[in-house]
Image (cartoon, rainbow, N blue to C red; front, side):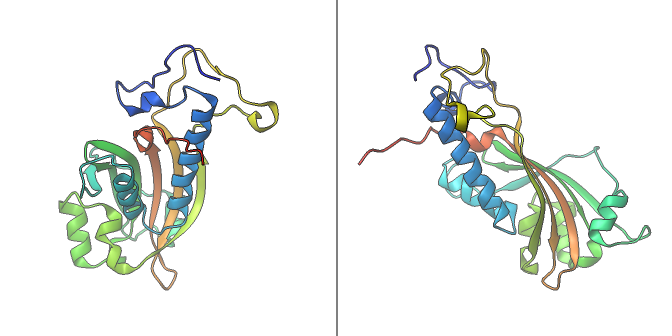
Length: 218
């Protein structure tokens, strides 16, 4: 069951090198990833979910909160599909914000966000334009809801058919994590059901950058 050599992930020395050394560790990695997936799907704000994930897994110093690093120069105008999701006409302003959501020194996700400024307060729009505040925190007072459109697992530590064929001790000669593990697409809505934001969120391998869980026996 134990691999003969240490398997390291692609991004330098970190606790990620503890994952995937055994079939049991691969199962744990999948369970952790699906736990995060479920938490994101069951909460309106990805920002607040990542706040809790970062704190629970000690990915940053105690008290750290998610901040948004703006990615500029890569604007994506709202296309017909985005405008349809937001139920706005071709002449209505749709703003765009691309960010990296960071906790401490770890980028946990990258997000494309199209939103309707007319649906937000002046203070919210100002904060989104001039600060590193994450979108979910900036609009938290709206008490918004989230409609999930898709949740895609971009990587699995287990090969297809493992549940029927069993687990192999060595699935590939040079395993490594891809940069992104999950992708979510969603629409954020006001309490009356009016959509005001469409998001595409890509979650990085840093969400697994903590020591492998211990298997405890009773």
